[in-house]
Image 1 (tube, rainbow, N blue to C red):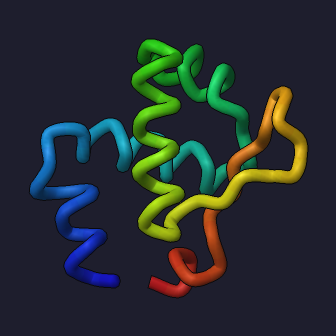
Image 2 (image 1 turned 90 degrees about the vertical axis):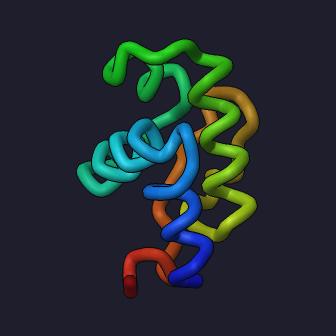
Length: 79
């Protein structure tokens, strides 16, 4: 997982925004719209980052589709 995290946060173009997203999610779960507003980033950009973070087991979505909250995974929290 360490190599994937390095790529996600340090070696790729969107890494800085993904770090900002993770910092917000450490405070409390949020949905994509909240993240977009709080970080002043376009909603579509946030959803792209959330897909990448979900694919790499950093975040997991809640059960509801509308207003879906994102949580940090237990696996990521251990790193």
